[in-house]
Image (tube, rainbow, N blue to C red):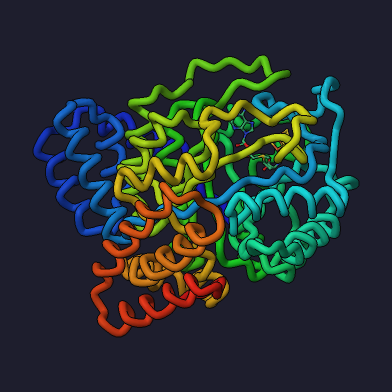
Length: 457
Ligand code: SAM
Ligand code: SF4
């Protein structure tokens, strides 16, 4: 397995060297960021230390521009679905840790999976992120595969789930091959913290193996999975270190495997029932927004994912500076949609319904999207990178966003939202530059209004 994905000495040295970056240097780094080609670790280091409020505004403005030029105005929505909270690990920050004896462990039966998925479909969701604790007996790969098949098979009068992203513990090439066969979207796995000593002190159980976690995405590549997501659980260690390490990881995958991360997640630690973890590294709101803007310009092609761990006010600000995917209407307990039966993994801060979140982002001019087209059209791995890196992916995102949002308006929303939504659709339809594509989108929008579903480019 590969060595030196993360070079801690190098990261610390960059952080020291860039402590007193001149204003001229910051200006030229921000200028370079506008080219959407990403930044070097040294350049990112300079921005991490940036505190001058004028520069911060400029950074946010450029991040917003880069998001717009790569992905356009759309925000893709999804929901997490907790399948099993059985877990053999003892992660200090997580309520599912094995030493939480107050949690009556639960894994969903086929019947419960169907029930939960029907609830999610009837909310309007098309994309799920399924979550499991690590437990070789209760959550073995066959259970994961069976779950995926069962979810794809659920159909209600309002639709179905069209893309399943998966968050399971680091595993073997053989198991990743089985996941690939089950037709997953993105395989997501967070390093939690890239700082080895901190990592080792916060984990017990198989997950405590730092190398196993760090090399997991590469094993997934060996198994033929070519869409992977990275992430840090912010609050475990110094965020400046974590950002540089996360970008090193992304650059490593891109350089050696020609596939950078399809997505990057930036969860912040949230309190949880049985968790007594405290940390001097808790990230404040200002720094959190800076992290998002820096990631957006440093890895411009990656989807940036924001969860409901964040309060509505922060989500609103984050959407404006680079977030391209978000969960909404989420529940973080096993089997918890429509029921209140089990302890959640952590506390959710945005408790609004999907409809309320959609209304809010529309008011800010974003196009809510439920698109699942790329992996169904084989735009994954290197093929996705070839389109997203030069900023051409929005040519697909806009029409697909329009079609899936029109479907949402047709089946899931009330009249007030519908009228506003139709106005938004007309506005962005006219912005499709290619006349043939615009015409074809117009035709398909009409077909959706007449009852067709699942149209995409
Ligand atoms: N068991 C798998 C694993 O650990 O990779 C699935 C992950 S878990 C269901 C999803 C993510 O939730 C974890 O990777 C972690 O980053 C995050 N998480 C755990 N406890 C959290 C907390 N208290 N606050 C915020 N996020 C948390
Ligand atoms: Fe288990 Fe994942 Fe929670 Fe760790 S983070 S205790 S592995 S569910």
